[in-house]
Length: 506
Ligand SMILES: Nc1ncnc2c1ncn2[C@@H]1O[C@H](COP(=O)(O)OP(=O)(O)OP(=O)(O)O)[C@@H](O)[C@H]1O
Ligand SMILES: [Mg+2]
Image 1 (cartoon, rainbow, N blue to C red):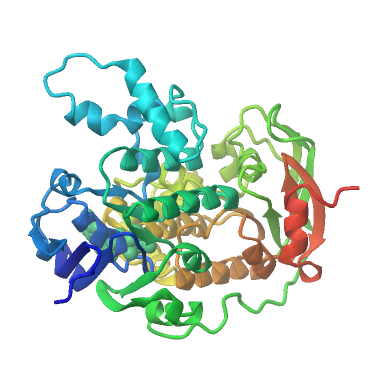
Image 2 (image 1 turned 180 degrees about the vertical axis):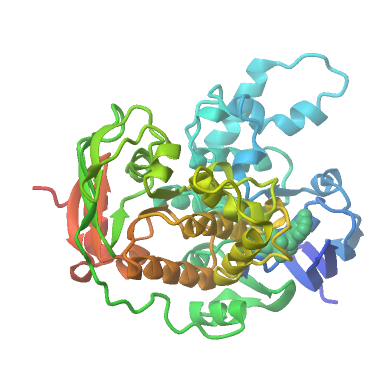
């Protein structure tokens, strides 16, 4: 075996099984110090599991791990940390302690493990040390702020700060850019480059293939729990990567549609929420897919939530087919035919401790409980199984708990749940976040299918190419207002970007 010259780690023939799934089979993986290695694969391919093995989350795997040429026994998080392996998990919101401050979270490991018998914490020292870490990262979040008050992007930064606050030789970043805006991503990449120049070996998981070329030198592609190829990223273009990921070529990402647009379904006027949103006016027609474009933080999520009755301060006039709606709660919204597939799906969209089947049929149940006292178990199972198939949800059965699915497959459950409920208006908030290219295509096809059935779709996203690809018409949001309305056929990413960044206003 030839070891990487500058030191590094090597995983050899790693296998691990869970009830009903062989998650990894004989996977080889190596990461060198001072380089960034992209770990790529479709949802459920085994990326997170492989990295969890490396971070000591499991002790029932087989295979060997070597660090700098010597065998390392990694069976617990403590073993991994002792070697300098740090991981920033995909599930950002569960990895931090919400009611503690930023500083306390960053210094958590040292506070818990490093204080020995000391009975008190030196708060000033703690905040100074945490502040120094943030400063080195070029991040300005006050260390005394509570984690519960942070945005998703800020939480992500705090998690990375926590990882590099201790001795860190290898840093695993599991889909770190999914919740980040492009400027936040740029900042993260600056930090990655800096850590790399300090000799840290970085393993980077992402479904956004273009960004790999900005920071990665090496790449390993996984499929179905196996390693497919390892090599230099510069030797592989995106189409080749996708082909390795899916085991086949992907012809076309967006479905061919001939939109049949009917009369106005949803009409909204004068929507304000006393905070972010100002005097929003929009409408959706039957059979129409309408984009809501805007950068992270433009107010898209707030608008989606307000339309779903989830924003207590919102006032507006909303009609559906001319009928006035009362949108005081999500429950009311659902009953009146509006569905929201929320952005923070793990927190708001799904019950992770419940089985896949229960999650998929939950929305149907809540909508029809009055009309139908119950759904027969056989019917429920059939509905769930059908949705699992249509969305390609990778799960051993409909009885599997959602928390045991891969991140992207959890997203698909959140989406499938609302597709089963028969609504008139579907609001998607960043539906492709964390979803692999193949699954994206499935989601686009489902959206096209909804429109073909005469439903109205509002599609909020900061991925401008996807907005252009899937929608008929686009509203651009900037700073809590709708600043432009465009025909999807008559615009391009460049023009959208200008409006999204507040440009082009008379
Ligand atoms: N604790 C567990 N119990 C049961 N099955 C699990 C567990 N952890 C992972 N799996 C299964 O192992 C497979 C690989 O999952 P993993 O989370 O590693 O995928 P991934 O490549 O990270 O996907 P994604 O891009 O969606 O995050 C999946 O089929 C998943 O359901
Ligand atoms: Mg994962």
